[in-house]
Image (cartoon, rainbow over all chains, first blue to last red; front, side, top):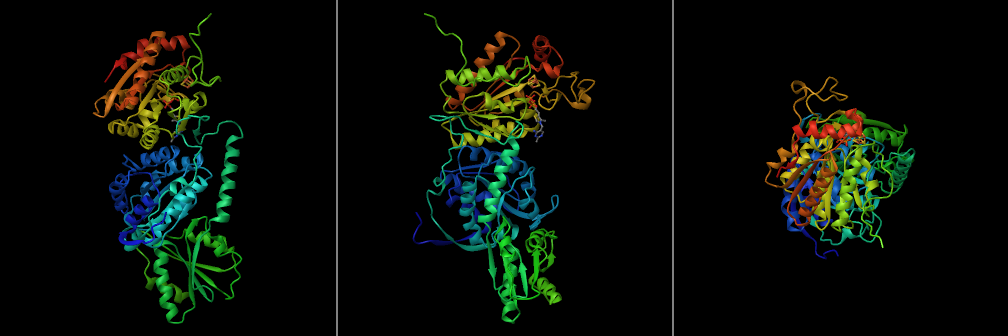
Length: 356
Length: 243
Ligand SMILES: Cc1ncc(C[n+]2csc(CCOP(=O)(O)OP(=O)(O)O)c2C)c(N)n1
Ligand code: SF4
């Protein structure tokens, strides 16, 4: 049931993600404090119990992800959130979730690394998020919001995809998005969590054979079989779930490629430059895994010598996927900053001018 | 007319285990299965199994189970119980799992007073990985990683995690039992039963530590292993009610 009159409230990105999760039927949250995502945990601490849901401040990120594993095994919609160093600690647990095919939502509000780095925004965890991060041949579905409203909306999609594919889903935001305040249109939704039956959950074996949630396959050949089942699932996700936004690319000589906060900054620049008559556009990957290959491959643009400029708050991570998707058919340039600095429109413009 | 006085519990599957001759894991599995049957909770119980020699305990039990990553059983169990308070949730963990890699999860689940039952198998070594030193390895005990015996100067002392946990106000019940004899095994069953009953009565965190033989990595016969529990292990880990 969707409320006919949506109301708007002012929320930070972190709070919007928390509110979105609650509206999407999240029944269980566990997390450990870390900047710049603390507002998310605080929001959950207040609002989960108010809505008869479970909130636990865990003793570590490791405990949090394993709690999410338990809650999910027991059939609940479960999530955790953290920022880069904490997400590193969760990797073993994420690998177990993927191996046991348990749905879960993991939010990473990225900060700058490596190591303790600092608390300023970054996009340097792209490799970790999209390449697996933990051990073994697995994939997380990765969504990258670029506004507070989109962050809110993606929580519905994240829980839906997690249940649909029985797979961990990561929301990859950054400190800029987490802290930014914007009005958000609130959707009241109920019963979303009941859409997917979970006959595999451990709920007590009354009236059925016992269930076991596990990722261990010791007998010869069993793990390979299980892995092939995962690979088939991942191939299906790659086929069906690619998502991206295109902005003014039809006649663009230069197409900027950026995601999350960086895309937002780039979009503003594209708007400005278009007013001056510059033929420039933007492709914004919304799913980072599956990477929106379809946005790049076999597009045969009308514009000859089109160049792509990938901008990231990292020293070049997503750019690899753009290059792989284009398979050498266009020139790909890169501009990046990492360590807490956010690329400005002026810096991007300088690079564009150098390319023209 | 004859009466059946002994049979396989419904909660135990009819397959042989992979455990070594004289191993305590199989006995502990059976005791849990008997208690689950007797308390009539087979259809509501959820076991959380460890990484260790008992990693496939779920194959032997005939009720719902979830695997947990090494050391994380009590985090997994915490969440299962919070999501499904109507179910009876227990963990089964070795000393490496519970008292080394998982110490943090163990202490904090106990300190939160989670209404859980924890069965702790103390066999003074890491069985699964080849008999290395465990936190509970005795001083002087030779293992794959303490070749000349555990030396407190290098390796610290045997960790008495049950005594440590007993200090926490959230903990309801802790008992240590030596599975060194038929009497010991009967006592172990009684303790396991109480630890499950506590959960049924919403009493809070209960833990039973079972001193359990690992003849393989103690390098002794099954019979000698029982003697070693009685005469050596119990000196450091005295059986009895701790809380
Ligand atoms: C993260 C991680 N580290 C190490 C291991 C390897 N490992 C598996 S079981 C185990 C120790 C088992 O010892 P214990 O918990 O005492 O159980 P036992 O085998 O003696 O019953 C170790 C170190 C692992 N599986 N995962
Ligand atoms: S190695 Fe030890 S604990 Fe493991 S099965 Fe053999 S006897 Fe049991």
